[in-house]
Image (cartoon, rainbow, N blue to C red; front, side, top):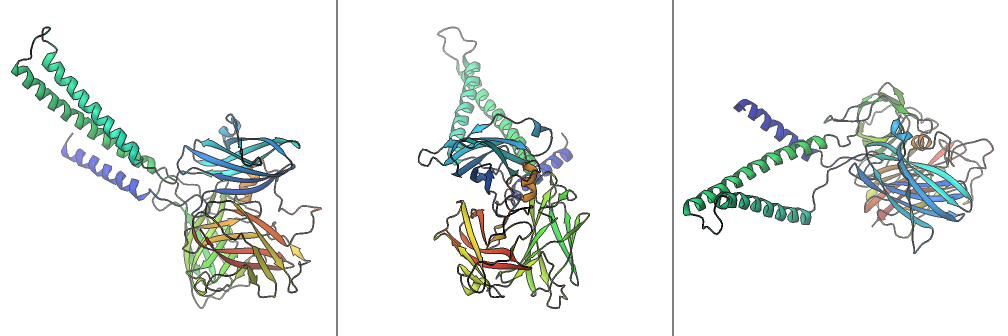
Length: 491
């Protein structure tokens, strides 16, 4: 190989190594900073509280936890399959969930997710109420590469050194003694040749290992290029007209399409705009889609820098949260707030924790019946209620975007965001695709003959890490969408 070719190859190796390092930590597929899925679903007579913890590498193992309430359950089976594509027609053998000996209503299992993309976990529940099936969508994406544990690395290094020394010793012994008659003693010349052969074999083995290390680094860097990269969202503001241009990831590599979005409970994007760093202004807005661009006439907003979180769903059911920042000027004209949009202006984070009762501008009150102590990576059903100015249950409750409520959980340092529905953290469009668009378990959807809307709502969620969180909850009465705001410290 000439010097020029060697230089090109060396440069490529360094480039790929740089990419391996640069992409070792990446955002998650949806719900920034948290990958776990929390759902509360009705499978016939069985009420299930489901937690699925997807792997951070693919192929990888996902953990499933199911708590049952009500009608006794005898067993649960789980089957992972892609939501769309040919593989969805060929499910693997189901995995039986193991019932806890300490809690007969708690089941666990682990399942393999073999490829990146939009998966569903079909849960088949059988018991005294018969057999029923429900599916939970699971976005599977490799978000990092794992390092070898230090203990394993030390063990393998020791064994490798032993093998290298043994191989060199075998070469030296073969040169020194392979041609000797039985019981003959090697001559000084043979011993010298054996020593030289040993040294040369060590050099050759070292060269081979060096080349293997180069190959491994190139392959590892190439594999890192397959890690999940979210689409980019570039804001362009002209007056009060906002365009959000969705494009390919900044660093290239595989990504979802920016032209295959589908509605999620009637909206192409659910956009939360939160003023930073105090989180003292929040807007829940719904841009319209034109090609690969989302357009929106902004309402009147306090000036400042906002973080924009845009939830979208792709045609295969894969959800993404697109994140960008927008500077809103003081002279923004602003349009009237649309009927399906919501806003709130709570006290700044620096003014201390908000309590569990939030007084709304029109005299209504929203209450959070919070757990006394919240712990990270633990599934909760978080209960909120809306009360009228007299402290009574409102008589004019309405569904908000087809549900009893919406919630956004945002960590104070911007490292976690989740838009959660009463059924759970999975996108409604993904849920409907996973369940064959049948509306299975869509308890919050507006249907003929539906009972009056409750003034209480539960959100299944688990905080992904310790720290301070601000929670924004929207509920609707009459024509008014209320935004309650709460704070909590999670240990």
